[in-house]
Length: 405
Ligand code: PGU
Image: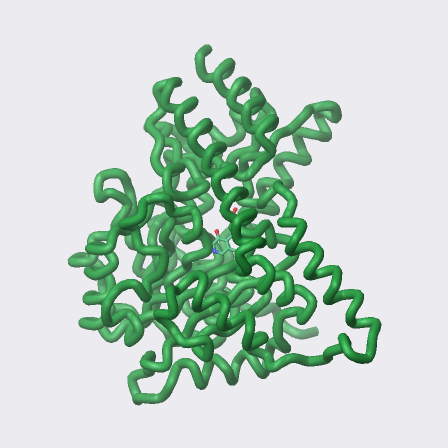
């Protein structure tokens, strides 16, 4: 028989969200009538704009006609979509030919790991979206796991905690090939300021690192002075690429559409173009995002679609405010929730899986334990602001009852 991929064997646990689901289902087995509310996985709940659904439906029906039919696309996305992304979301700061459309940010993270390979050294924020580390483990880029330190040998973890305002201490971060950086951050909800991102770009320049900037939540930023893209920072095009997504702003978590920006200026050590290699990877292991769904993406970015997208974002941010304020009233220290759809709640001295279990058992509310995002998350629990308003209010009532005990 074939031998098991030794890198997969290094993964310390199952992927975080299926594990949470498993625990939720275990509770349902014990209490089949439990009305469980999820503030766990960051999955959108509100319908996509009707204007967008109609564009998708029209494209689908068009496929049954000779004129409307299309097969394989360019692989990097429809020109109209790429242009609209640069106009609506990047103020024209990047070229449409630097936008590579995909089936989502998570999938692009996986392909990025293939792009850089097993020899790339990486730095990640701790806590971080688990895909950066797990994906790097799978590609073999992380070295062995140390149970004692609860981390992988070849990963530079950049602790992000209240004490450093959730921005890494770059002076004490080693040089690595890649730096994963997510702002607004999943899971802490923190955003990096312009000055902080300037520091990050300067750090990457000095070390000849490439920043992989994840802006999946950029549209949730409310503060007009907070950058929504790394490309708002001067010189970033020489040291950064950006992954992003329609998932959270447009309710496309199940529809699937995202993109990665790879600037032409971004070069490897030998002077060769990262964009050229990215195109090579995309044309080899991906065949383009669905042409039907790309029409939906175009519709999102038109005025009629975008006004509803903005309404949905405001709706989720109101959920975030409700959750944040309710927890604060209960005396819990919370972070995030003002420029991001996540609230990062601190339970000093407690183990996050225990807090998660306790809230699940006693309130029938699913949260996400901070330890699932890295060792620095261990005293924290993440609450997602994605949910129907009734459910959010009900979850808040249950949390109040429980935590006031
Ligand atoms: N990037 C970040 C920072 C994310 O938090 C998520 C989703 C994605 C990318 C995925 O984007 P797609 O375009 O939909 O692929 N994070 C959610 C969902 C969990 C998951 O496994 O992706 C979360 O709850 O953290």
